[in-house]
Image 1 (tube, helix red, strand yellow):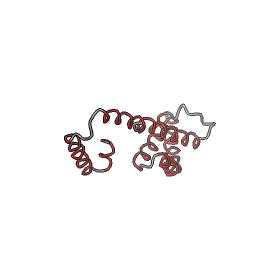
Image 2 (tube, rainbow, N blue to C red; image 1 turned 45 degrees about the vertical axis):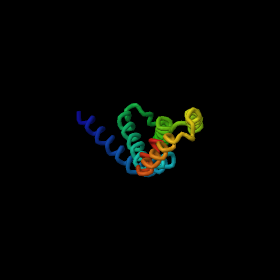
Image 3 (cartoon, rainbow, N blue to C red; image 1 turned 90 degrees about the horizontal axis):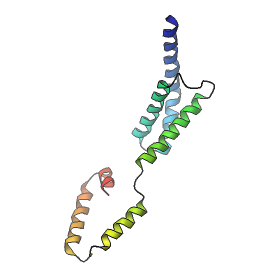
Image 4 (tube, rainbow, N blue to C red; image 1 turned 180 degrees about the vertical axis):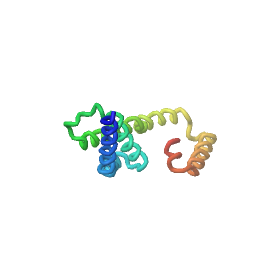
Length: 132
């Protein structure tokens, strides 16, 4: 029973050393893909959590550093894919079709558009981007 305890302590020490050695480099790598510090940190931390959770099934003959960088890159790409914005060309075409059905000389339409733009101007940047 003592050997299991020694292995757990050794695993924790090795993991802690890996974290201290590689976290900043992996964070910088993630930040190149996603220029948002919080998201880059979350992704980097999640990679370490997955490493810890799967530590018994990871091939120790392969480079752990390579595994970490590949995991961060894949996680960043998945995040970008899952959070990508609408294709602006498609959205522009859809808006043009909607606007073509509305007469631009209609004063109510122009007044409504001005009110919307005024309200959008008062919102924080991220909220405004989401609504647009």
